[in-house]
Each structure stands twice: as C-alpha cells, then as structure tokens.
Length: 387
Image: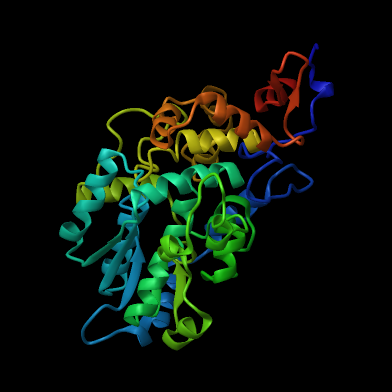
C-alpha cells in the first residue's frame, strides 16, 4: 500500500512548542494554533514570584514545630528532588522527612544521587522497597494491562509518602510541579491546585488502582503483596490533615536552572552518557526505562516521546527555538532504545511478546497500518516543511 499524508489521521502541532494534538496530557489550541500549555506557561512572566514566596511562607506557618519533622518531601534522587528539598530547607526553613519509593529501576548514577541526599541535606530518609519478585510480575502485568511497565513506579511515589504522612502524623507535603498544568495547561497559574486522591488516580495512575492488579492468572499478585500501593483511608487523611502543595505554584520552575543549582551546590550528577531517546542528560536518572522503553511505549501509543516533552519545556523557557525542537523530535522520538532488551531480560519475555502486546495500544488517531504490516503516522517536520 502506498501511504501519503492525505490518508493518515489528521494530527496538528502547537505553533509555539512541538506538542501534537495526540498529547497524553489533554491540551487544546487557540485560533493562532498555540496550545493551552504554552498559554498557561506565559502567565508565569506576569507573576510576582517574591509575592508568591511570601504567600507560601504564610501558608506553612501553622505547620512549624519546635521539634520533629515539619513536612514530607517525596524524592527519587533526581534534579527535581534535590531542588524540592533545597527549596523547602533554604526558602521555607522547614525540617523535612524524605520519602522514596524504590521500584528497582535505578541507573547507577541515579542511585548514587539518591544515597547522597541524607548527607548533603542533613535530612532523615525513608526508602520503601517492595519485593523484586513481585515487582517483576507487576512490571509484566502493568505492561499487559495498560501499556505501562512503570505503572508501579507511579503508584508507589503517589502512595508511599502519603502512607508515611498518615502513619507519622506529618500533614504537610511538597511536590514539584503540577504535571498536567505544566505540560498541557489543565489549570491556570492562578488556580493553586493541590495533591488529591483524585489527581493520583485519574492523572497519575491512568484511572487504575492497586486492586486492579490482583486476580490475574498469568501474573498472579495477592493483595497482601501490594501494601505499599494502598492509599490511606479518608479517616486517616482527615485525622492527620494531609495536604500536598506544589512548589511549581510558588516558583517559576525551570529544570535547566534547577539542574545547574543542584550540580553547583550539592554535587548532583547528571548522566555520564547520552540517552538514546532524548538529548537531556539530567532527566529521569531514577528510572532506567523512563527515558527509554517506557517512553518508547508512549511513542507507540501517542506518536511522540520524551524528546518532544523536553523540547517543549525548553522552548517555553527560552532555551531552544521551535525549529531546534523539531530537529530533536526528528532525531529521538522514534528510536527503539536498547534498554528494552534489559527490561525483557528482567521480566523474562521475548521481543515478539513485547511487540504483539505493544501494538494493541497504538491509537487509530495516530497510526495507520499498511498491507505489509508497517505502521505510519504524520510527523511534525512534514507540517513544518509545508509552511
């Protein structure tokens, strides 16, 4: 079959960044072709960030204690984690308890960064590490059920810190940026969203929860094996008064500037080697699959990947032109990275098994298959060339 642009599904891209209309995070376009993510990001230029910091200092005042932990910071050891703890300690003057969910995916450099956090920040640190045997089954099941072997990572980081908050009576918690607002402009920069159970399930966990991963015949997992994924009861949340604030509501949030700060001040290490699916060296070191096999699945499902995400952030923050972003998308988004084979060995499955299941998640809004079994989609450089 001869494929041409007319026969392919009608995708469009933001006129300012490089996000497609098939974005995993919902966004829309205005009459000029600019996406809601870019429009909301532009609001940051008109915000008085010193005033925002004063607002936050007033908000946290009731949570100060004469002794003990004053807040929880969920951390993975990445650049954002380091900045979050820096912000909490240096800008707010709070004593945090660090909490990590360990999904057994760490790169060596990511694990070194995580292990150094206690020393460089002089903070106590709880690390919750589930059984590796169970995680292998959950990796396979997450991939088969929702096309995401890293579902367990999302669930862990959005659950374990809240469990610790409820258990130890520490109500205040600090996250980084509100993802769906930062990426797609889900909310305004004047809305001040906070972390909730609904955000966790609907946006963080794709609508699934721990009980959806029990009772499978091929990869059986018992409810007792999933304790670290069980959200506290409403009664416990209300008793403690758990509250999750996003630092991105009170800081302009620029990963490039954050990376420089944590490298210079705390000796944080970026990746010593390039990634295969993105140009950044400072993102997702806590998870060997996040920039690779997991992200390749996003390309399969939605037609774009991590290089698009990173380019959009860098375009919005003025570190890259749109034309440069298009080239990053062209170079990286389609790459089938070698860490896929690491993961297949980890879960003891074949490449054919992976492809058969992965192809069931391809959206007909993005992909068309030809008579020879090949997959085709529109690309941003096709649109750019036509302008």
